Image 1 (cartoon, helix red, strand yellow):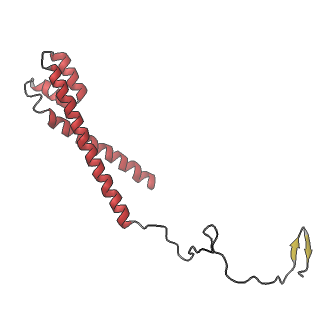
Image 2: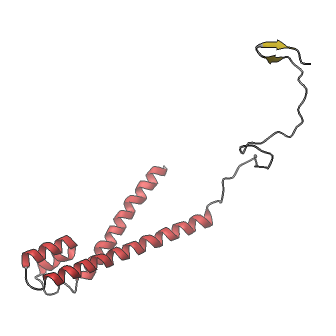
Length: 143
């Protein structure tokens, strides 16, 4: 179950952050592509590599400026997505700190200074043996 939740969370995280980057980049390119033909403006707003292709096809003196604006829009979009990811991680850490137990709970056994390796040590005094004891492969009577 843990693996499924981790994989689902990773997949949804990539999808959501990718959508944020795509939307932010397109919004940042609106002003930069205003002088282009509608098809070229739509293509240039899709991604940075598409902007480079549009500049290579269209040419002209404003191509360098358009590429620089596309790069700036991409960096701003990545900054926005990283900020959202940081906020989600912070909220998750706060949730874990507040609602998850600080340590594992045990039902009966508690650690004490007299215990070894976390195991409970009997506090009863040892009794003398009442039955035969096996020593070095021979059975002998206690005593």
